[in-house]
Length: 304
Image 1 (tube, rainbow, N blue to C red):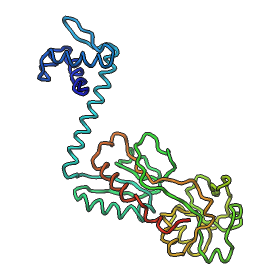
Image 2 (image 1 turned 180 degrees about the vertical axis):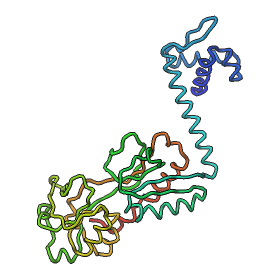
Image 3 (image 1 turned 135 degrees about the horizontal axis):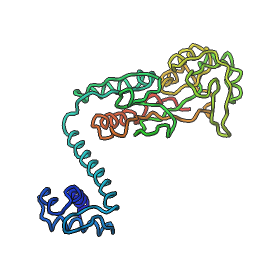
Image 4 (image 1 turned 45 degrees about the vertical axis):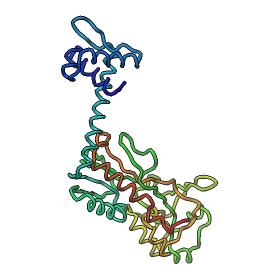
C-alpha cells in the first residue's frame, strides 16, 4: 500500500463527502478510492469514515487523522517544492544578524565567499552584541554564541565550539607572576567583559571543582577586541574566547594561564524560526557555514 496515496485519497473523500466525488476529482474509479481507504483503515486498525447511502463523514478518530494528514501532505508538498527550487539558481534577500567581534573577525570572510558562490542572493548583515528577537526585528537567521539548549522555539544548527581561556601578556606575567590556582586571581588586575551574567566574578570549571572568583577589575568593556588589546599591552589578565585571541596566542603576544580552569564551553549556532526551515537560502547558508567552520582556524596553534 502506498501510504501517501491512501492519505491523499482519504483527505479528498472527506473534502468531497463521498467516494464517487473524490474519485472524479482524483481521476480514479469509485472502487479504487474505496479500496485505498479500506486498506488505510485496515493498516491503522480503526474506522475513519461513517458510510451511509447518502453521505460519507469522518468519525472522531477520522477527523483527527484528517487534520494530521492535511499537515503531513502540506509538508511533503513544501519539501518537494524546496528541492525543485534548489535545482534553480537561488535568489533573493537574506537578512543575517551576528555578534560584533565574531562577525568582523570570522563571519565576514565566510559571507563574502557565500555571496560570491551565490551571486543572486543579496545579503544584509547586521552586527550587534545585543540579543535580538529575529522575528520581531525582521531577520531571517541569527548567529548566537551561547550555552547548549539556550534557544527556545527556534531551529538551531551548531557550527563551531567556542572555547574561552584566561590569558595575559608575557610582560604582565613577568611583573606580577603566573597564577597557579584560581584563588590567586583575586590578587591580580583583571579585564572584565561587561556583558557577563556573573558580574565582576569569573566562574571556572576545574578538575576538582567549580570556582566562582570575585575579581579586581582594572578595565571593563562590552567588546572582546578592546579587552584583547588591553591584555596585550600588559594591563591585566583577561578571560576571552580563542576566536578573539587566537592570533595573539600564536604570535606569543598573549599566553594562556591556568589552562585546566576554564568557563563552560559555548557554541556558535545558527538560529531561525520554524516557519523558515524549508527556505532554500537558509539551508544553503547553514550548510555553507557548517562546512566553513568545520575546523576553526582560530584554534590552530592555541592548544592548552
